[in-house]
Image (cartoon, rainbow, N blue to C red; front, side):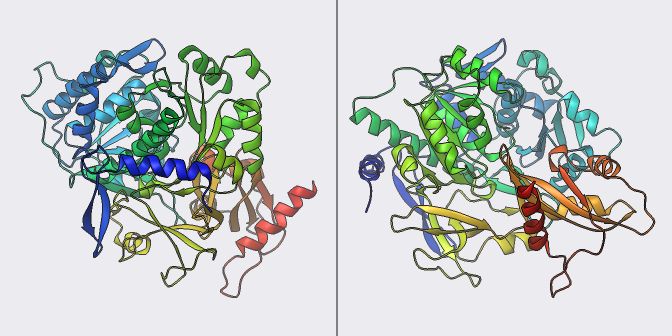
Length: 565
C-alpha cells in the first residue's frame, strides 16, 4: 500500500505531466517499443544553457568559487567567448572529443559549457587518475584537445596520447584562467547548431573487465536525464507549496563531489540551470570548509557520497556553524549505511536525508527515496523516477522476474547512454535488444515498487563513491616481476563503505616487501585504487573448479580476520 507521501507526490507529478505543461510526456521509438520522453525539453545542452541562463535566471548568482562570483548570464557569455576561441584558435569541429582533466572550479564549468557550445563532445577525464590512466582515457576517446590544469598536465608529461594539451587555471577569472582557449579575433557570428542526435559526452566507468570504459551519450540522453531530475524537484516543490511550505530563498548547493562523475555532472550541476540554483565550489573535500561555505552562502541542498553527509552530521565542530538553511542531505555513488540515516536526521531535525540510485550509463537517472519514505525504508534506494524510468529485475536469460525475487537490476530509459566508445563487445553485453541496461547490481522490487540492492554481480569495489575494478588493480600488481599470484577484493570500512585489499604471493626467493609493492602499484594506478591492506600469502591461493582464484572465499576469510582483530 502506498504511503500518504507517495500518494501526494504522485498527485503533484500527474499535474506536472499534463498536456501543454513543461513536463508534457510523449513517446519516441527505440528498441522496437515506445519510450516516454519530455516533448518540450530543449533539443541540446547549448539550447538548455541559453534558455535558462539568458532568461529568467540571467541576473541570479550562479557560481561562487572563492572570490569569483558569476551570474547565470555572465557564465553563459563567458562560455560563448571560450567556445568561439575553441573553434577559431584550436580548430574544434563538430563531434571532436575535448578532454577535460582538472579539479572542480568555476573555470571547469565554463570550459565544459564551451566545449559543448563549440560542437565538441565533453570528455570528462577522471581528475584522480595517474598519468598512465589519463593517457589511456585520452587515447581511447581519440581526443583532439585536452583542457588540463597544471597538476593533471604534469602527470601527462612523457606520455604519448596524440592530443593537444591546453593549460587552464582555476585561481583566477575566466578571462585569465581560460585565456589559452580564447582568441583575440572576436566571436564568430554563430556557433554550430546542435541537435538531439549529436554526440554530447563521454564519461568513464570502471567495469569488472579492467580498463575504464567510455560511456558516450547524445544530447537527447543527457538533456532528458537532466529534465528527469528537474521534474522530481518540481514535484517536491509542488508538494511543499501545497502544504504552505514553499521555500523563500534562492536554492543553493555545495559542490563537494567531482564534476567529472555523473552525480556531480547531471543532478548537481546540469539540473541547477533549470532550478536557478547557486553552486558553491570548494577545491577539495574538507568537512570544516564545507560547513563554513554552507553557512556563508546559506546552502539549501547538500549531495555527496554517504561519507560526506555523515562526517558533517557527526563532526565535533558542527554546532559552531549555522546549517539551518540546508533542508536536504542527499547521497549517491555508493550505498548509504542504514545507521547513517538516523544519525543525519538526529543532527538536522528540520531537514531530511535523501538517496538516489543511478549510474554513469543511465546519466544518473534511476530511483529516488525521499524524506519520510526514506526514514521508513532506509534500506531501499526508492521508487523508479517518473515518468521516464522502467526498472526490470532480470534473470540470467534476460527475462523479467516476479516482484520480490532477486535478479539483476536493469534500467530502460531514453536517458541511457548509447554505448561504450570503441567497444562493441562490452556494449552488446550491457544493453539488451529490448533496451534494458544491465547494471551488474542484484536487487528486488517490493510490493510498493521500492528497489532494494542486495549485492553485486561484478567484481567492483565502491570506495567512497569511486568504482574500482578488482581486475584492474590485480593487473597493476601482476606487472611486478616478483609476483606469482594475487587477488584483490573489497573489505568493509566505516568511513568509505569499503576499501581495496589484496592477498599476494611472491615468486620463490623474492625479498619484495609490502611497502615496495604498494609503491610500485601507486606508480601505475590512481592512489584511491591502491590496496590499503596487503596480506602476504605463504602458499598458493585457493582456486575454484574453473582454476580461477577463489576471490569470494578470500574476501570472506580476510574480512573475518579483520573483524576478529
